[in-house]
Image (tube, rainbow, N blue to C red; front, side, top):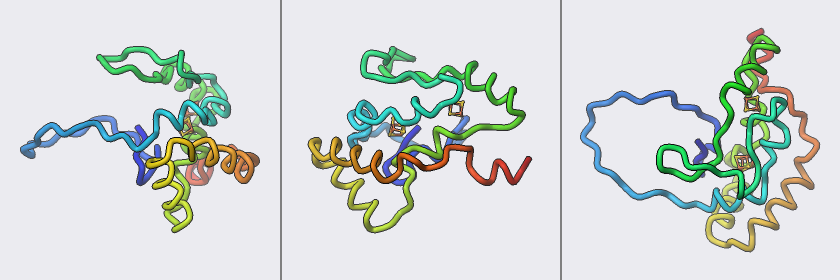
Length: 141
Ligand code: SF4
Ligand code: SF4
């Protein structure tokens, strides 16, 4: 799951609540189109569990989406002995909440043509970010 505010930095397993809720509408902040340009998580995934490209979407429970191969991912975790999280580390939506990055988020949402420019910037300035898992993982093992 990816949100505009915190990227893919959370993985809800389940939410149990008795709050009275009403259905709202899907939120479109340009993510699908941006992911089609990006694909960095798929490139960096060491297990090849993340499909890349528009034609790799499949229907899952009525929604057309990219489906991570959870078995493939988990097998990789088992070979390393700990969780991975590289796909979270490298996602451009996870940049810190600075003024600059927030302006970029707004521009990506509002201007389709800006997505390509943002992607060029991402690869130019962050391409060589190291891709081991988050520090809290290495601290924990
Ligand atoms: S956690 Fe690691 S192995 Fe699993 S999908 Fe993400 S990058 Fe791939
Ligand atoms: S790294 Fe983030 S923005 Fe890029 S394709 Fe993956 S989920 Fe989408």
